Length: 110
Length: 110
DNA sequence: TATATTAATCGTAATATTGCAATGAACTAA
DNA sequence: TTAGTTCATTGCAATATTACGATTAATATA
Image (cartoon, rainbow over all chains, first blue to last red; front, top):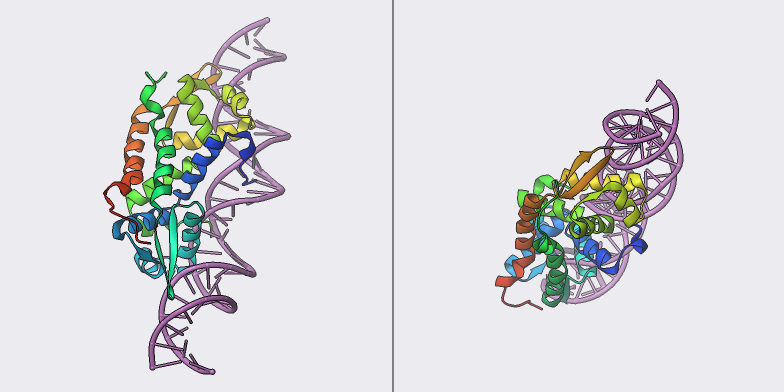
């Protein structure tokens, strides 16, 4: 099928999985790391930095933008992409809570 | 292609994306939450709890086990699955560092 | 031994993802 | 206007993922 049955899960479970999915490709991880590193970016830089073709980078940027983790401002012929700080923080709250589920658990069973 | 070009990324970038990918499906998120909640589990419970067919749950468990986030002990005819505490902690270190990239960044550019 | 239970595996269908060449759209500069 | 630059979109091929029915393997129980 290739199609997740999202209707049988909670909104939170679906939200977590959507954030995780966008981090589930090394190119998008690399793009985000680069944006954090230089704190401002245009797509051309990323093509040179990462090594995938321009349409491929553009597609990954689109997915990051769709989730709100980055924003892009047109500046002449180029586009300035950067992290969306508020949305990143909001995402971090959700993901951190998921990752920290283990803190109140006593012991594993087996 | 459907095939990530992992060779052009760092080990850390690939590691992050592999962890994220396994969280990129709500069923696996739900399985992990359930395992944390009851702190011990057999597959049959998960089938009832989550609502997907038994082979589907088994497949998701396999992926979680493959990454080391859960472990399964055979107990008679059933299998006791639980969180692999050490590996979960190790994963959390990697993912938390990735999520906290924003803490030392001054301001977004646009 | 025969039957039941539990979970893994196999096989397959449907859909999603990844990657890129080709093209297009928007702007800049000569 | 014409040519160049930059990035988005389209279209397609290759591969991955998701889901489940059917089956198998392993164990338990009558």
